[in-house]
Image (tube, rainbow, N blue to C red; front, side):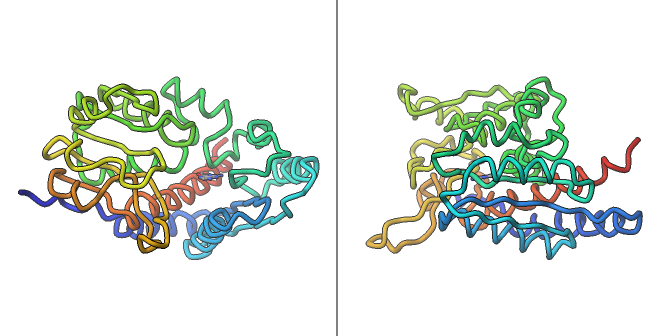
Length: 288
Ligand code: GUN
């Protein structure tokens, strides 16, 4: 029985964020103070934590941030007006509206209202289209972070069998495009896939992005595979209430060659790439 190497997202984040902080300093010396604006509507506890982490990460890396928090029953027109203001403000380089939004909001319409030049989440249709065409402008942060993790470990992507479990717009679909661009052979599995295990067992790189605790078990993994766990699930109180991924780490680590833990894997890299996108947006304002 082998034990997989751990792909430490905290360690990689620390080194990437140090380089980003240098780029932020360089920008400031040229008169550009990189700034991310974050909008949160409602009191969803998980969203509040994510927003707080994003704002704190900005501060630590020397980026300015604005945080607008609205009550859950806010009229969407108020948020649209704020987005328009931020779009027009040259001192703001990135705009992020935390999802999910309360039900009176048309989330797609909100995402389309953000200037595609400031869409550091990479969710605007124009940016999704650019990624599809192999000319990405902003890559959504979680798939971008996963690509950085794979590159940092020199995981071979060219010709690799990649299986992604999950077809969300935020993770599964952009992840597939990015890996395809690296010449991997990509399969996307989802809730209607027949015999999931027959697919996952073929994967040299397995990406789990479903949101179901421990659904990928060791017997579903090809020996030596790279396993990327995007899930962040909270176990019920009677099981300890801890955070866990979509992968059953205990059984998976005996089969995989390389594996990301939860917490401390993909999560920290997601915020790191948000900072990277914001710096990138700010640097682009200096290009003519
Ligand atoms: N909610 C869950 N993940 C995300 C994300 O990456 N960006 C935003 N804006 N909201 C989210």
